[in-house]
Image 1 (cartoon, rainbow, N blue to C red):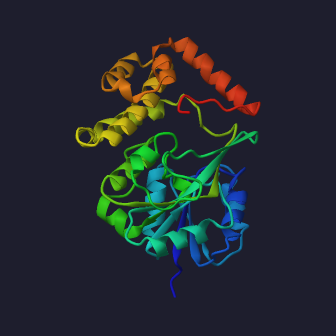
Image 2 (cartoon, rainbow, N blue to C red; image 1 turned 90 degrees about the horizontal axis):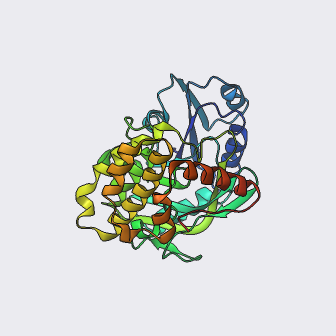
Length: 313
């Protein structure tokens, strides 16, 4: 008999995290699943740690490094079930995660995405609950407007989402041409066309550590420029989606200026309706590059002192 969920975990050099991630999977209260781990050409000890976990539900595939989108798609292609639960190799689930998603699937069939609330741990210092607009602490159902609710934190996040395989076959898989922004791009494609089910019960934790690339200035994030251009036609007729995309433009514009990419900074800001930004965001976009870089360092310093500041709240 086939399991209910296929859990797909892409791994690239996560030897310091993968053990805890796998233990959080094996400790689930709902146990009817298979685990598909795609070792995306790791050069550390990730592979050795994975092989130490003896469980017949785990299948490990080792491939050459092609990036997270390719690894996820590869894992999905090996899935034997109809429901794909994603998990990144440095995040963890609480024991209720799959059970909560199973209940969502049962109560709200035929949705494009099934999502749970999550929290983020920064540098083992500060834990921040996700903030989802127009969603209360006891919500369980169809999200009225995915893009409104995702203006601060995204309703869909890779380690807290289940995607029916039929939806991926209908709307496409992760875009392997994107190194950054591939998650957002897929969520948009689905949410523009399908209903999204959500529970505000927290069941997953996003782990941001000193070894991660969160808050980095990676040039790879320039790929998000492509995402901004892909859906412009939908923005003309969908006001909440336009605001959602303008906040993404704000984020990309800030990163471009911090990287010294003034040409793309101007290109992105030109398409922003500034009525969709708050006062902090408007001020930040006017600051010179050296001030933005200093503020980013201050932000990281304060997080490590258990103080969380963001222009989105």
